[in-house]
Image (cartoon, rainbow, N blue to C red):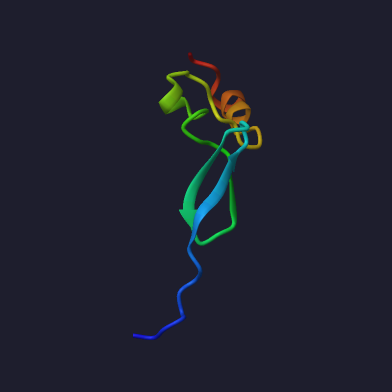
Length: 68
């Protein structure tokens, strides 16, 4: 096997979420930015809310109506 072809593995990589939560994981990157994490994801929090990306929910509601 070839030596020195693998990237450097960092055991303390900081992950920052858009909600403000930060935690540490192991990764080959120095820092990671995410939009959702376990603190703000609706599946883990139990909240029913829609994560809207670029107005897609409003566009869907305009096209098909709000049937909730």
